[in-house]
Image 1 (cartoon, helix red, strand yellow):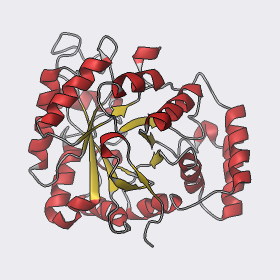
Image 2 (cartoon, one colour):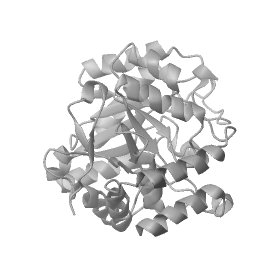
Image 3 (cartoon, rainbow, N blue to C red):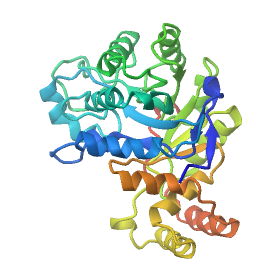
Image 4 (cartoon, rainbow, N blue to C red):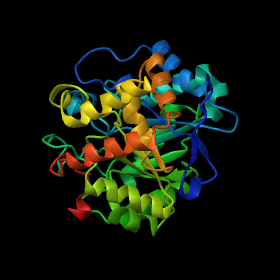
Length: 343
């Protein structure tokens, strides 16, 4: 069944229409334990499933990771700590290489996809080539150029980079200088649009004062909805910036399995005859027309389930009930937006 609910991107991409629910690709090549990445054809079917549901003129957000400049051995040792940043395991550019194989096999899908890439790690951790005690990001102009050029090399001309963002804005870095670095690369035709990742309201304002920002990728779910997240969503809406809400399904197992939020979601899911995951996605989508849930999927059936949630409109009374429980149980000490500029 074709996707019905769409949204326009913000900033310089305001003419781009996307399906309301995007597709995160991390798990196809990054995995929490040593094992085997998703086989190509299984991954391809998961990607195609979403693209095939698009009406004319609408694109699907494909959210991929970029690359690092750690050695393969170092990358392997650190891979379990790098989730969500650069979505390859071995090789480190595995996610981008998977996409190049996909678009090489299915070139007709290029124009249906809006490809977002984030970067960038450096081999020079804390001034050393051997100190891997902490994740080290490097948004310097030199490393930014190395990373985007490597991504383009791995894509092999099969797909342009529609959107590019740094994995984080780092402590000690100037937000404005980071944006000027990306603006220079954009001017060279390396990519078309610039976004942010894990930025709070103040940082979003500062970045948008330098260049028109398309999106801010932050974690939003019924379990991740504290004040700084709400403020970031509000500010993005004010500035015409799209929020890409990663991990919208949150944690519906383990410690959260029987808590008040889960029980409220389950009650709504039962009334609507939808899955718990779809209820989470629909609730996140209800945060505003500029809020795009960005769940991950490696399987066709899950992709279709996630996308169908974009067309689910929860009744006002259901949203109000979930809102009440979410706000009453909001954990302000939980994972914060990873933005050192407003700590």
